[in-house]
Image 1 (cartoon, rainbow, N blue to C red):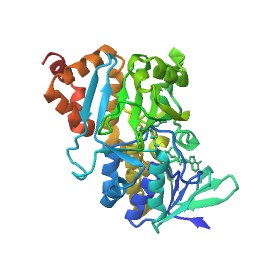
Image 2 (cartoon, rainbow, N blue to C red):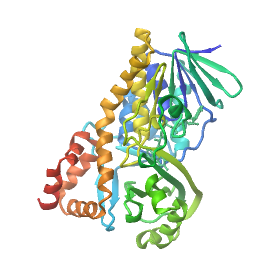
Image 3 (tube, rainbow, N blue to C red):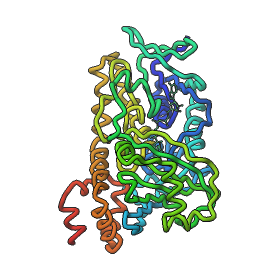
Length: 410
Ligand SMILES: Cc1cc2nc3c(=O)[nH]c(=O)nc-3n(C[C@H](O)[C@H](O)[C@H](O)COP(=O)(O)OP(=O)(O)OC[C@H]3O[C@@H](n4cnc5c(N)ncnc54)[C@H](O)[C@@H]3O)c2cc1C
């Protein structure tokens, strides 16, 4: 019989993180994915310092293993292009640097990065990894919860962790999470080779173009002269402006004054593919009797940057912490499971709120451009921005009107 204390549905970054943190605590789990790995995931492929911090908590050697992989490039900063075309380069600085000799971020195709995490799970004797199995049924009982796949195969556990991504039907069925266009981004990704003008230290590029706000066009450099190129926009604006993202992408690359030069010799190596990004701009219920939701299934994507790998892995870590408490107490009631909601929002809630505020700022392109102009000409402000990219305490200044006053008139 397939039985474990914890069953995890979905082996993306969120699911792998849950299983690996549980294993670190000596708790066995079954990790199930409908795909067979390696598998692709539509993404910008940006692996931030937040991800490296979490991997470091798991095992500091993992980041070093990742550095040695030929399929990643280290990234040392971010390039912001404001609506008025001004360019702002901000190096990443991490106050609590994971390791001084490691970069603050990477770019790696998800087919490789996710497989790297899956390999860590496969090598762990406490994780029973099952691929090619789609779970489509969940029910709770007095003694256990049951998960079932389409062939009728059953998995028994005390707690189910749903880490099955943006299109999770369990999020809707169990927690009532619906797709709300105001809290959702639609994104497309394509791969190119030979894009000119990328930063020599592999800065990720975020272009805040007027007609894409709130959202952006990106170029994230990859090994072998390749780049992940894409764009994302909030779904309510897409509907309102009747935007066709694929058409928009091709138009930009052919007619935007800066981009058409940079793409004139570039070769497209994969056609654009789309996927949804459920944002954490609204607080949701993310647990119930005998279950927790993780990562995209819990709508935890950063509303400003579109970054979701870090929060998926962090929520996996928090779920492991809470699962241990439940097992120790033998309490799997909805009320006790709520401790996971409190813990998760307690840790990343203020950051999500701040990013929602920054997303709101994008409704005022002139203000955004003005701030970028000021930061470009002021080294102290540039330094503050560097810290803001990685330090939530410094970023909290963005909540204060006095910050904008100082930037604009200081
Ligand atoms: C266009 C785009 C660009 C993005 N760019 C970035 C970026 O640059 N950086 C960043 O940090 N984030 C980015 N994100 C967000 C990021 O991709 C997600 O936040 C992240 O993948 C969430 O991880 P997860 O583990 O929650 O879900 P996923 O990575 O989606 O993994 C879910 C897993 O569940 C499996 N699964 C689904 N249903 C079932 C089922 N019923 N039974 C069993 N298995 C199932 C799937 O096969 C999959 O392996 C982007 C997203 C998009 C769409």
